[in-house]
Length: 252
Image 1 (tube, rainbow, N blue to C red):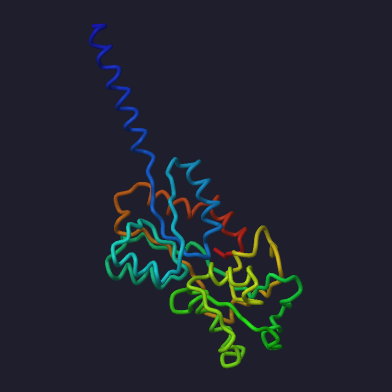
Image 2: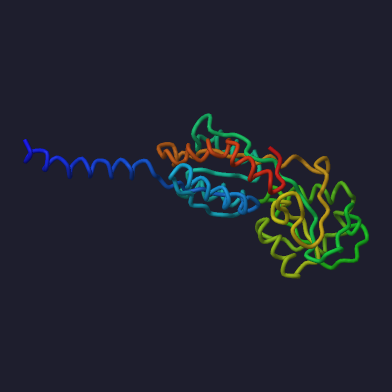
């Protein structure tokens, strides 16, 4: 009897270790560049609370769409718009019923210089700057929103020779932060934390000046059998993630 137990005990231990490993999975996530700071904060809580690990890649939504269609190994997609996840869903590239809006973004006109941008964005009309940074409007929803604001203000023609275009919103931000452009349209989340702009000067663009920046999330087909993919989507809908998302200036 004792001999049999001694042989079974290591097997039980191996089974328990295997079970523990199976419960902690890794999820590959394509994250719109504007959401990089919030997801980094959320990732730490997600791993601590669920045991799962989030591995994020950052870029422009349009570029991610192409990569996903070409077989990139992403399992969850956090888009900067809601149109791209809908398109992927209609093409059968997602887990049915997993799509939802995880945040509504806010556009800001920002300069790294304190006092350079006024609270009404009059600096655009004054036309004393040399370069205006925006994200590529064909690939990045924040870039598209920026062009809509310029059109609404009647400034499209005026700024044509001054635009500096980044591949995504991160690059648009970098052009301004490094001084290569005096000002630029960025995601509020890039310059905002806990209720205030963290540096420079900014005009928070009224939401009615451009189409709503509804940011959609979806589980991709490659994530359908990964428990960590579903766990992440559920976590993003929860109160802990919501607190982080709001702290970066997003609406829910």
